[in-house]
Image 1 (cartoon, rainbow over the protein chains, first blue to last red):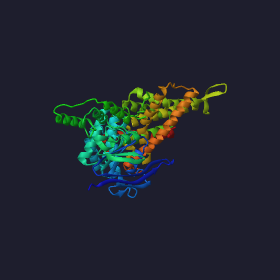
Image 2: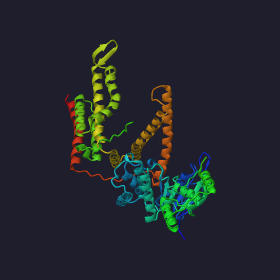
Image 3: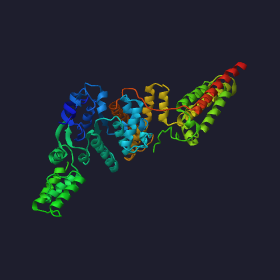
Image 4: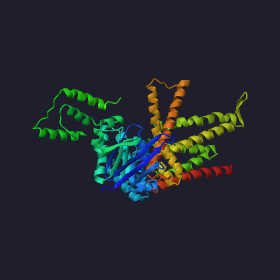
Amino acid sequence: MKKEAISVKNLTYTYPDGTKALEDVSLEVYEGERIAIVGPNGAGKTTFLLHLNGILRGSDGQVEVFGKSVDKVKREEIIKEVGIVFQDPDDQLFMPTLFDDLAFGPINMGLKEGEVRERVEKTILSLGLTGYENRCPHHLSGGEKKKAALAAVMSMEPRILVLDEPTANLDPKSRAELIKIVKDLNEQEGITVIMATHDVNAVPALADRVFVLNKRVIAEGTVQEIFSDGALMKANNLGVPEVFKLFEVLRCFGYNCKELPLSIDEAIEHLTRTVEVNGGHIHLHIHEHTHDEVKKLRSKYEHH
Amino acid sequence: MIEYPEIDRYASLDSPLHQFDPRAKIIAFLFLIFSIVLLNDLKLVLIGFLVSILFLIASKLPLHFVIQHLKGVSLFIIPFLVIMPFTVKGNEIFSFYAIKVTYEGLRYGILVVLKAFSAVMLIFPMVATTKFETTLKALDKLKVPNILVQMLMFTYRYIFVFVNEFQRLLIAMESRGFKLGTSSYALRTIGNALGMLFVRSYERAERVYWAMRSRGYAGRQKTLVKFKMCTEDYVLAVFIIAFAVCLHVVCYAGVGVV
């Protein structure tokens, strides 16, 4: 039996102006898991994440972190376990230098100076930020800022990492770097990852399970299950990875695959396997129904 | 492009004042500034003024950088020189109908201007020769109330974000045909943009506060910093403070003799 890292039960949150942001949200996240929360703009994703470490509290429902109710224990207990990386690094990096920012959390945790320095050093090393210690945030690029924001949270060594739009506004290289860092943190240190994102192409790399959130939990499943549900995607303003779509098109042309690949790596693997099985080549064809199927497919992913 | 208000742009130069321990630097120069400002003898103030220039030269800060900052300050200081001679009562130097220029007024005006410029010029070796964050940490170490240090720190951190944000707003407005000017339309539009900036700052402040609480902020901000006073620091600090004290000793002695 896997250990529950986070358990949310019947969480309901209403904005001060009366609009409902979250309605009866319940979900479980297990230790070491990687979760993606997807949903349209204004679906309450950020609001939901802010409940996970008790920044927003007093709402109806219950949030438990490793069995401890967020409402009942001190916030310091929770923030040690749950680190949140905000969407805009400028919100997160508020100290004059990177070093101070990385030290901010550990100092607040009451660690001794030597320990704080040790943690900062370790984090800087593991996130490849060596040489940036004394830089001020306004002299960092967007990608560096994002990494720095992540580092500022990781120096507290949380067991659960919560990311709000981790890949937004990053160039492809910074984006790939960030994905790799998060992946490594999960694989090597067993950190539970929960991220809210619109970047569908990052979901397969960073998530085992996906929740579709639109004020309520609309659906839950593996990445494959969620992306395969075209109607669900469309109803919630979501998209699927381009590779996934391409193989769906190929399927219309007679390519045989049950599980559509979600990433380039999976696609290569899939193609290689198919070619090997079919004696060195792939067979595609156009039948009468091919055009209809392609047409249907296009309308499935068109947002109006 | 709008220029960043970077007071510590030249903090990485190398001069005796750059290497001066930040804590000692702040105390010594504050001492000197107050000492000069509290003087009432024109000759001694003139000496203080010249010494301020010497410190400025010793700090190796580029002249254009200093002048750029002094320009703004002059706007507030120079009027004293113009107004004082006409308003202070005393011995007339010359009069033109009802307007009288007095010796006391002129002396007073020069006194104020010299003092003010000395004080401002001494701010440069004090603040511009250290990275601003180091100055803040020094202030914290000097037991300046933490809330003040935090306010300074946030101002310093977010002024750049706001400058950027306002610049983005302005560029977005200009790319839709807006021209910066003094027409009532332009002013109104700028007013709206500033209002927008305030709203954004408010929202940002909330998010920053969330981020801070997420990392355990509970009202006090502590930083780790290592300062070490060496012999040179003591010598320089003692020298500056001694000089500041001397000015006043001479002043009192002078008054006593005369």
